[in-house]
Length: 260
Image (cartoon, rainbow, N blue to C red; front, side, top):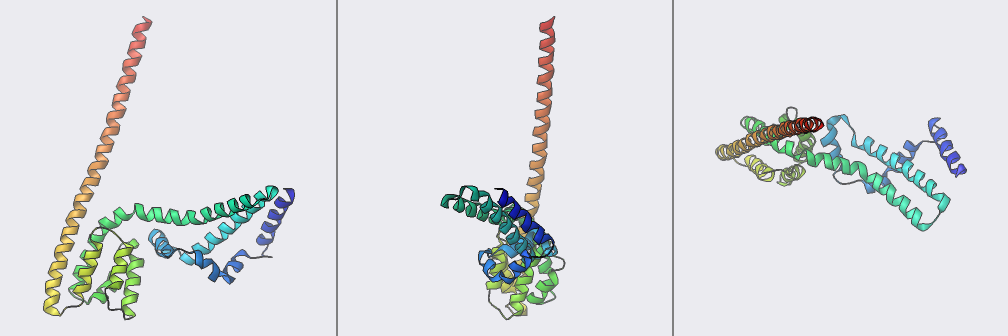
């Protein structure tokens, strides 16, 4: 066990003095590590951190930390070497590797409610821009003023359209990234809005506007229900505290009466 600790300390000293480089090892073998990378990892990182975090840098750090944890686990189980212990070390290492991804996924799911409330206002911006520009141009211009969580998806959507994809697929990919109420239907309407001529565009714009208004009304109702729920919870807490206080005072009164 002492030799294992000495080995770990020596590895840390060599890494600190740049005699060996874990980061360089990861960069040289990045094609092997990306096999384990989840398909939606980059999107989830951007959804949580916005443009302030590079998914590749975060993933490299994730791989490095997992490697350190795995080495530590293997070294820990060497004192009682067996196939079961080595298997357990790799299972625990894999669970540690997935921990960050699960955290990002959990964050995204928690914020789907916020996405659902923000989507109508983004679509309202698109409705205004669509009156003056083509849909691809309107999408490009909407990026700067859109909520941060939509910006990665919008950039991908615009890039695919600018690359020559004139099908509905880029719009559907955006809707899949933000799977909230009516996102698929509204993105289909947005796609159709970019297909028609001037007269058809006017009719499509009216239909799109009605859909946006309906979603805004739903969002306002949901915000009202959320505020009402918060107020109800506060009221229940106050009633509970008041009731507990009254019970304590009654018990104290009874105890005092029994003493006399």
